[in-house]
Length: 116
Length: 114
Image 1 (cartoon, rainbow over the protein chains, first blue to last red):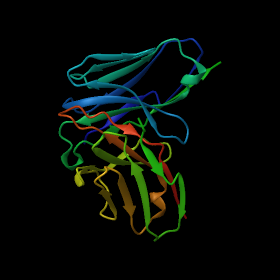
Image 2 (tube, rainbow over the protein chains, first blue to last red):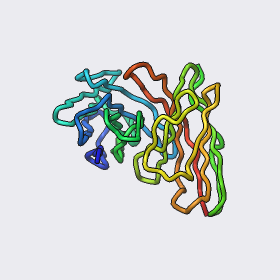
Image 3 (tube, each protein chain N blue to C red):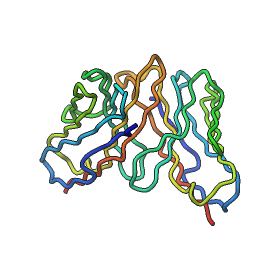
């Protein structure tokens, strides 16, 4: 079964720290991996998408890496701010998902709190 | 450019009823996907529509059905509602070009089944 796991489930750090969120997936045959942010009770905001042929993507203070062979991705957040507090979700589009076609497989997310 | 919109924002139904949720895709997008997100969980893929045809389905029973219209908007229909259907229903649109398919999500519809 294709699964996505995120560690840690929750994280609380003081403002200004750099931090890393982890994502692992069970099958290295993927099209791409996408990181999302979700505020409480809201929809998902796309942060970064990494194609299977890429190693990393950067947007502002965010950097996402992809190691397809080991089935891992990390999201690095530099100089964290209270406004970064949210749940961060990792989602993978697997190559062979049976009847799932282009559906994304999500992890359960990392709930991040940045303390002022 | 208009983003993905969904209606209604909240809905309360009773067990056994039927519900229809609506989604307007982002301008220029040709593919719509629906996801169910239970409290404290990641979203789960329900199905995807491309050019008005179902293009893949997750592990959901047939009472979950959908439609995509010529303007690429979409509906999710759920029959014979069960208590476990209570969740946030998310719609995502994308422009499928080869293997590139970045999905953009709407704000969701919160469904409560009593």
